[in-house]
Image (cartoon, rainbow, N blue to C red; front, side):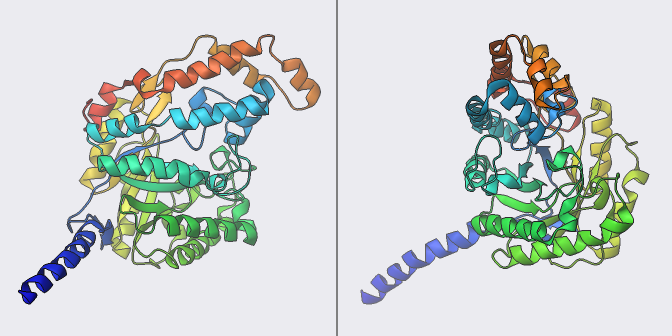
Length: 409
């Protein structure tokens, strides 16, 4: 009897450990393959949640105010600080919701990439707040939705301290100052370490995309490119102090297009990433990356592509998969757009908002002269944009989705 009781007790204690071991598996790498939790090859198929945590001007149909900082300045001029803060809070709660995530999974996707701004993890003012935990509050929410749906997540630092790109997409100041500042590099590593410590046991997270599109083509590649891999090594060292579970994703120089900045892999769980837009969808366009994969026996992945015709996206998707390359097409959601997963309508009177952003406002006199006669009209147009962006008010681009092999749920 005592043996039976002891056996039952041990079994009761042992079962949770086994279950934890079974459910606590991570996506990993093996040679040229990304490997799923059943030890089988995993080919990423999904999209990017662009414009949510990193607003981009062209997504609003703005021309000159292209970065989050410049968009925010225009909104401050139109609405004032209190109303702007209220708007951004509602924006973050509305643009991406559980309904969006459910749709993505139901359509047939297995993973998504989420761009974020480093400021969400600092006390710097960003999108109306300066809460250093806001990044976790927002990402925890969407990761929770993805966990429920069975959708893997890549976290993408789209905007790094000092700016890693030197253009609007890094929300910086027009130059990749990250590579000129040891303080900015340390801050980048520290933020990634904090993120990794928070998510180290989260199996829904597929990996960390360390720097989006570093070192634009406008700058001296010979001067800057040699600094790229050392920065990746510094970030990797910081992450591995707290998290040895997750894949680390390294984007090439010059808009994630140039792998010549890389030497042999320096970590056992690296994936090398390229982006491709508006090229011919032919083998020669990706052959350099395939050759790199073969040379170093590492996985490669296309983190951004798309924004093209249904025919092009379908042809390029087939090319990628023929070469065993996973992908995340850009973007998921965009205003008045057929070249993405879903879209929504332009609000009434929205042109008044666009027009304001195109008026020169280089000093305070110019700002006063540009001031609209009817601020409430512009405010309504902005909130109508938000209303239209709700999932229930969006519509899928059926041809685009079918070209990617997805269904409209």
